[in-house]
Length: 160
Image 1 (cartoon, rainbow, N blue to C red):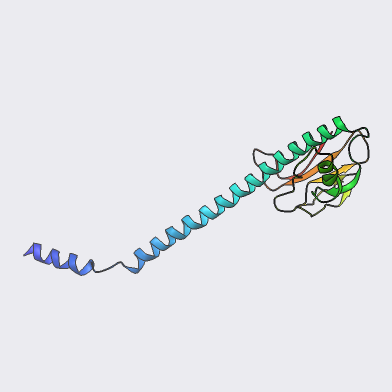
Image 2 (image 1 turned 180 degrees about the horizontal axis):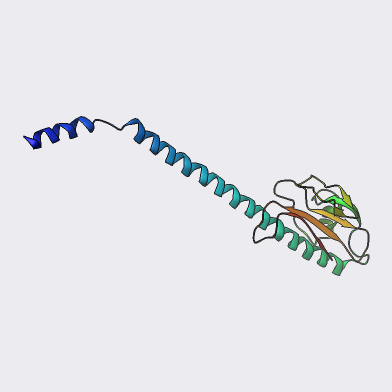
């Protein structure tokens, strides 16, 4: 007799999921989706920062090759975003020391306000910014989005 009553209770409860069970499953799925999106965005920012650092290092090598071939030194610029179709990028491509001029993955043409080639503090989201008022020196500034192996978030300026 005990077996048949336990079997009836089991059969009655096994017709479907309860509302609480469904809500728990939905909340777990929501948490997993949210956390994966956050992690994906962090990974994407770090990848863009790594690209920025690599592009600036490559561009410094291109400028060194240009200086080696040039009689006049580094290309002069009062401050500009690097572009293939204008300014320093066009000069380097015409000199055949560069095939492609690197541009920032997110902000290829947004120039920062600057003082003597160094971006003013507090700015964010700007291009690879080239400045040279001397034939023997240049400055390239860029912005990193996050703290990562590529460097700390914020403005970075490299000189030669």
